[in-house]
Amino acid sequence: MSMYDLCMIIKLTSGDSILCQVLSDTDENILIRDPLQINILSTSTPEGIKAATYYAPWFQGTESRIHMIRKMHILSAAIPDEATKEEYAKIVAERFDQKPEAKKPTTNEKEDSWLDQLNFKFGSEEDRHKN
Image 1 (cartoon, rainbow, N blue to C red):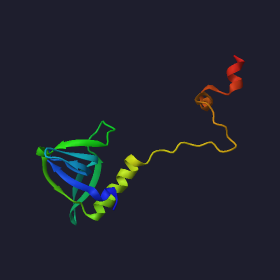
Image 2 (cartoon, rainbow, N blue to C red):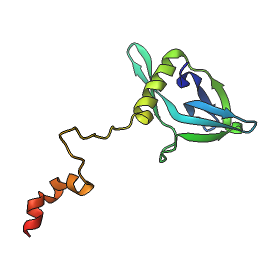
Image 3 (cartoon, rainbow, N blue to C red):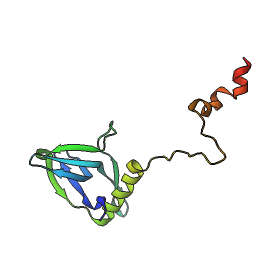
Image 4 (cartoon, one colour):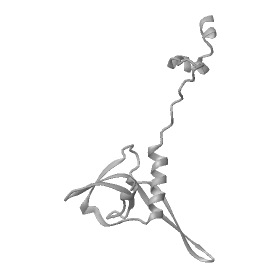
């Protein structure tokens, strides 16, 4: 079982529906991680109404992955289906878990100082000492 199997869909009194991992549950609050707002876009087509689901960060303007919600603001909660769990795991891995790898010097490269790595901005060392 992966940690994404513990995700829940929560409907809030604000009207938001979020997909998240529930970390803890007390009498008054729940602690959640990596919440995504569930958005549904409906369009009318000649074949009928089509709906598409897309996800967006729920709490804009923060890098925090953990949030607290008062239970009094929760209308309902449900366990998502397997397809939704897989989509959630993919989005969270892309958005939060993968960090760019630092380039490691090969045996032929020396590890330069940060100033040497900026030579493209300042020119070569010879050019800097000519003036």
